[in-house]
Length: 437
Image (cartoon, rainbow, N blue to C red; front, top):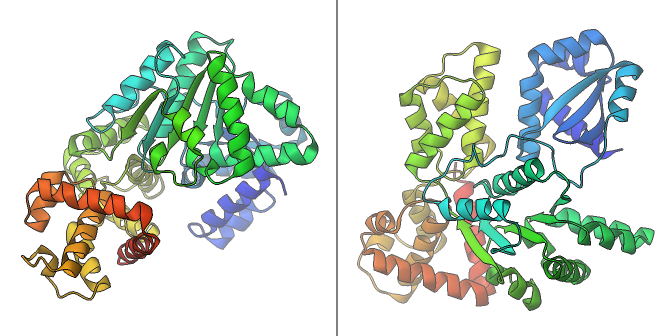
């Protein structure tokens, strides 16, 4: 089964949970994913009638499913009959792994205190590749805008210098492509492809860590591009020094240029993001509903986008009024689909006390016993990691000065690197917190 067919099969499975069996059998029976190109998946349908029905009533739901799968906007092209299918295939020419979408630009990237530095660095790179920040390494949690900035750089350069060769790749896909090249005896073609890039964008770099052959090839690719004066931009979920299985020589090279982190957006930025996303899709949300979303969805931009898209589906399919009541339902659904989103400090403290067999309230009490102190350090670290509260706000939650909070965070960060048991405990605790909802 082709990749397009596998993806479409998954989309139909997701639709089956939202639509009746009659609808699936009537309109989606016999559909097949036939190609992935640019920012779209092409799907063949069995008749013009089915094509029109899907396009009229279900296309938004399909694209919402695609977004859930890929975390980037992907459209669906519906094709009925051999003539349309052949015409589509004849029009395609692959483009080095980069979705050809103009949705991710600097103009629609909402800037706030949490991402201002990374945004400015990305613009500098797009304006003058390889001149100052090479490589540019952007790190931060999932759904905070790292991929958006990669695409914004690519889109700006592609518009202003269309002759430049741009290659985008996810770390995991780079590994898979290398393995396929080795098996097929096409190592030379693989190297020529990547070392001929003018702009090399590598997303989720953490996935190459621990893979010896991939790291070896990536090391030489990096050197070739850097020495040729080509721009390299990388993203990851953590800085190079925290990638335990990444070779030291790669860590060193990743740190040659500029490191930028992106943090979860603050309240004002979340409000701006909600309004921006709603305007982009023509959805009217009143101020009260906007504030409700911003106060309840705090972890990342992707979750905010998910709520806005779900509200669009409610309005389109149910003709629902977009007010706080509707928003509340949308948020509830997202929490059910993604347990553990937006945990409160109280929940984290409660789960930590249970995990270490402590009485309720001991972590915010005055005890300085070794066990309680260590558990308190861990709870503080988890609040810092799983929420976007400021240090003073975390201090208030634990009734301690923010300088003490900094000490707790640094203590656990250092211990976790060298203590596998503690690392495992923290992972278990996170799962407990996620499973609480």
